[in-house]
Every structure is written in C-alpha cells, then in structure tokens.
Length: 105
Image (tube, rainbow, N blue to C red; front, side, top):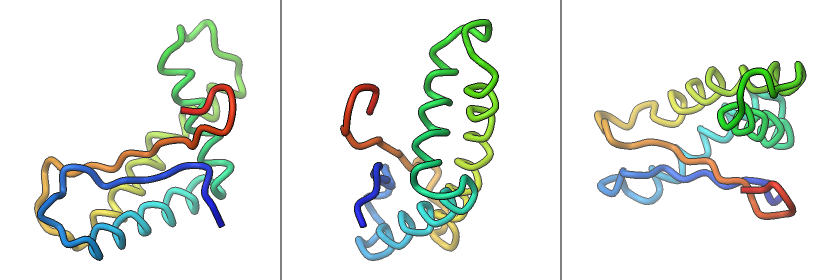
C-alpha cells in the first residue's frame, strides 16, 4: 500500500542501508500508532505546518488541536526510529507529503 508521505533518515551516511530502512520503518510505525494511521499523520502534519506559518489568531480550534499533537508524535517516532543505532547527533528524520493535490508538500 502506498503511503501519502515518505520518510527519510538524513545525515546518517555511515549507517548501512538495511539499518537505515529499518529505522525509517520504525519511525513510520510509531508515528502512525501515535496519530491513528497514515491519513491522520497527513492531517496532523498539515495542521502543524499551517499553525507554524500562521498567527495564533488565524487558527480555528480544530486546526490548533490537531497541530499540538505533532511535536509529541514526532519526538516519539524519532526516538523509536533511532533506537539501537548508537550516537548520530546530526541524524534526523524528514517527512514529506506526496504531491497529490493542492496543499501537498
């Protein structure tokens, strides 16, 4: 099944490909578990982007309540993804939305 987003572990060039892919899979599983599936990941991430690019007075209640879920889920997913990989201070996960229509990034 195709995901509406992609995940990449960046700045981890010394990591073997199989370990990088395993880390990305752990990240995906955790963020989807935390937010309730792939579609919710997209919905919450878009709300977080909108919130970060807007004035607080411009946000409606639903967008704000969705957006505040992102940092905690992202932190938990990154922690899960990096588990057992050792010290890689520059490594980080990047989530990119698939370009399926207006507003996708």
